Amino acid sequence: MLELEKKVNPLLKVDELQVNLAKRFGGYSVVSNLSLSIEQGEIVGIAGESGCGKSALSLAILQLLPKGMERSSGKVVFDERRIDELSLRKLQGIRGKEISMIFQDPMTALNPGLKIGTQLTETMSKHLNLSRREAQGRAAELLEKVGLPRASELLNQYPHELSGGMRQRVMIAIALSCQPKLIIADEPTTALDVTVQAQILQLLKKISREEKLAILLISHDLGVLSQMCDRILIMYAGEIVEQGTAEDVLHRTKHPYTRGLLSSMPTRDKKGKVLQTIEGTVPPLSERGSACAFYKRCPVSRPDCLQSKPMLQEGQGHAVRCFYPLVKER
Amino acid sequence: MGRKRSINFYIGGILAAFLVLMFLISFIYVPHEINQMNVAKRLAAPDSSYLLGTDNFGRDILSRIMKGSQTAFFVGASAVAIGLAGGLLIGTAAGYLGYWTDELLMRLMDAILSFPGIIFALILVTVFKPGIYQTVVAIGVLSIPGFARIVRASVLEMKEAEFVKAAKGFGASHFRILSRYIFPNIFSSIIVAATLSFSTAILIEAALSYLGLGVQPPHPSWGRMLSEAQGFLQQAPWFAITPGLFITLLVLGFNLLGDGIRDVRDVRR
Image 1 (cartoon, rainbow over the protein chains, first blue to last red):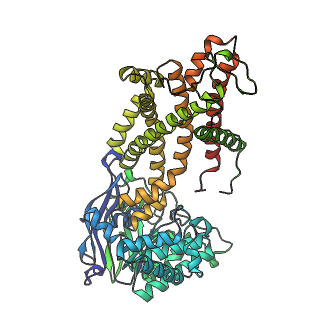
Image 2: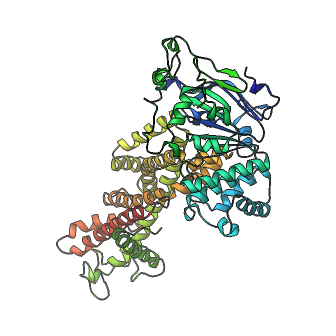
């Protein structure tokens, strides 16, 4: 077991989680044997290409996987309780109250037919037993906290009257409304433009620091993660290939895939040069076997990478799944 | 809303409003008692006292058309209510639960749909003797599959909507998701379907009554007026034309209105 996870009582501990497609879709593995832990107040980022299983992972934590995908083994422990074995009713008491989710597209994540105020107070009245008036008052407070002035006016507006950034702030307000301990944010800023994106991220970070709120931030944008996260996990083909502090992962990169991701990010010092990419695409679910999943695309692969699957190897909090990890600093 | 309303919406709306107005007036005023016969003026052409002429018993056609609209609206509305209730239940179950529930229910609906509607209605009214309530039930049951399909499709679409997933993520129960997140957002497509099947129901009622198997005397019915009139087509064409025209106007009006609503609906953008 990894050293990082031996610390006492992490807030969330995912242990050897396995998510498969349903049998009728081939039963392929989507997330394989994945373990991670999040401390209270910590911001952990997960990065990876489309199809690497990051969303499936986030949905599996709250048992929100779509039909056709199922968690076949592994444990999810939150606040010292197994939450992977709870009944639906008990889970509904945790969703939104202790663990909240923020979704990718704020344009469609709010109910178009209900006023902002109603949507805010509904979640609260479900979980917190507040009276209507108390809930209304708290709704206004929350809107101000997420940087939306004129709260009383906003409460009576419908989602279509708000801009994308405002809607995402409302989503955050709903997510915060019951003072959860953990927020799972699945690409919360992907659908927003860059300036709004920065504001939303700052807001999340500020709230996390102020309220000791842990955030599991899922993104394909390493730039976003580098600004936000204490720790970063890099996922590839349903597995963690590298994890460690943001500093370690981004500046003492060990896995060739992580390096590939970093060098395909446009930055100022690459101006005028051809942007590097990682050749090929994520292997389809049916072609994930017993070799290193990154073999085909890896610039430093050797023949024996095909012989067996590398394990996640730990070294001072910085783990990598590679037989020949990079040693040079980037 | 903001969306441009189509010409259909206006034409349909005006026709439907005209017929609804006539329907409402018929409760407080008709020019003549509908069963009052004027033997001296049998099959009379339209004049100042009988605006649309008289039938073979000398009864006022306009008054009978007006009273007949009560039958038509009653049959239409009740049949839609039955179809909507059944369709909402079955469509929601099929769409929300999915899998074998979906298969089972929708194949059942297909079975009903595969049966020619008018023949199904004929069998029903033959088994349970003809009458207005039997007609309503027959037409209502026949319209269940149509509603069920539309509701199922809308529920399926809404079930995958991001805001429904978000609601689940915030701990909403199935009941809450259905009542607060799914139903309000499929309401507009249901309205369209209800408007369209309202006119279809009235058309089937007219057809059954024309065959003598629908609404029975003394309830006046447009369909039966048509069948009574067919022996007098040459002497008194207005006798047949008038109910025919009203059936046409009603079906046209509500169909156009339904299409028009479909064009302007979709507040979701």
